[in-house]
Amino acid sequence: MNATTYGLDVAKQLFQMYWVDAQTGEIANRRFRRDELISFLAQRSRGRVALEACGSAHWWARKIKALGHEVVLLHPKFIRPFVQTNKTDAADARAIWTAVHQPGMRTVAAKTEDQQAMLALHRMRSLLIKFRTMQVNQMRGLLYEFGVSFRAGRVAGLTEIRAHMAELEDALPATMITSLQDQLTRIDAIELDIDQLESKISFWHKKDEACRAIAEVPGIGKLTATALVATIGDAKAFKSGREFASFLGLVPRQTGTGGKIRLGSISKRGDPYLRTLLIHGARSVMCHAKVPTSWQKAIQARRPANVVAVAMANKMARTAWAILARGSTYDKHYVSLRPE
Image (cartoon, rainbow, N blue to C red; front, top):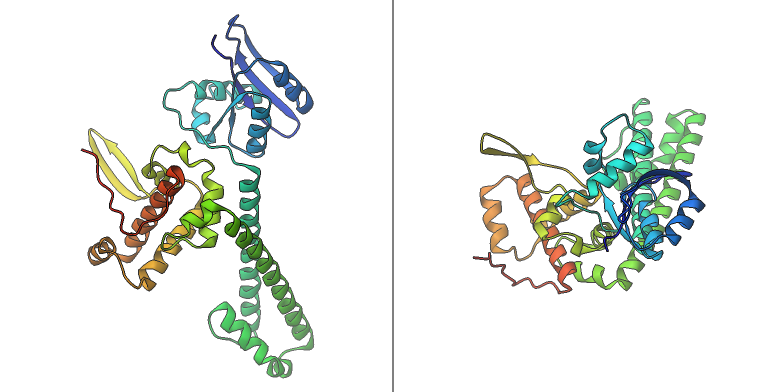
């Protein structure tokens, strides 16, 4: 007996579901409230529920899976082409149902609660760093209006400002000095919050076996390891390391017509935060590797630095995928063999 496939468009309060009954062929496109949807799915026989990988989708995936159904998460950009009319909840639900029936449709792995929590810590830390950078830049700009400038760099600049606070009190208005001190206090508070978040990330990194395994790869530290494990979800959702690198946007963009394909700059698809961490880690290996590999030496000799950084980030991502998907450990002497 074929199972019924449902296309579910999720929201905060109202949910739209489209399905074709596998036994009767009856077409339905109904609207539910949250409690009604859960009760409806709990009473239905086991089926396949497809939904867009958007806000709260991973929670719904875990909830629906607990009710006995198979859950399929689809990327929003793969669903939009199947919206045939104006964008409505009913049209979106039907588009989701249509998209999940396409052969070879790529899916998104559902994340666990721990993975979502770890990503939340990374998002909080990233936002606090932006706030800190904005505060420091604003302070520099305001002081420059009074003819005061300090050394480049956040740590060096703040240290010099604090060291010359007595001189600033004589050169600047009292109102400006008070606001400057408040600004420094605010920056200290933000740095304390960042340190606390990094401590929580370090704790999760130490207790998670997958994070410790991929942290052995040169260029992958605790931030990159935890972000990668939390972002990838189930590594087996990707067919290969090449597909995972493509998911992160670390492969060339392809444009072609008439049988001729042109390769451009990297596609920059996927999570920009994780891609940035990998590229920064690659730059660190380029500059600080004590014993560079023969592959690294060869590519650095013939390619520009930015191209080398992206290529190394691509290699790091593919190595991390292999470790996670196969449950293996990092071997610096491992040599991959292309199948015949």
